[in-house]
Amino acid sequence: MPKVVTLGFHQNIRTLTGNITLFSQIIKKIDRSIFKKLVLEKQPVKACKGFDSWTHLVSMLFCHFVKSTSVGDTSNRLRSATGSLHHLGIPKIPSKSSISSQNKRRDSNLFKEF
Image 1: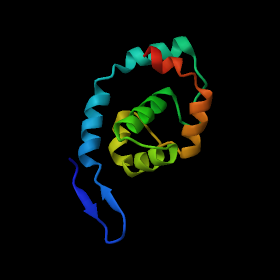
Image 2: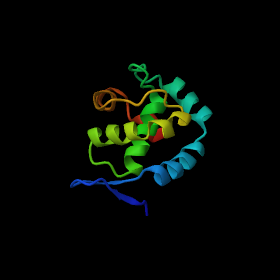
Image 3: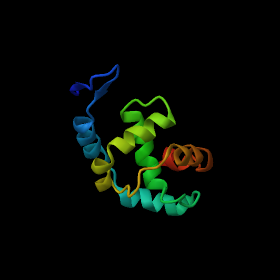
């Protein structure tokens, strides 16, 4: 269970350090060459300002892993873990609008097949 830090106001924030480490270990098990090959076959929507299929996959897995309840929550949590996620191949943390836009535009069959 992650340590809970009280910041002196009404909100408690769970530190993401332990969760990010575990998430990183899980993501590293994904064979990116297989994913890249599938992306080339499916030719989904072109990247949206650095928001490629890999970033989309990692963002959605992260959303599920941290039990996010909204796109905004996912974006905020990704932003708070910026330094920790850079090594996973995400050069820029996607904004709420980028995630939302790509969820609408990119065919989910790519992720289902993977």
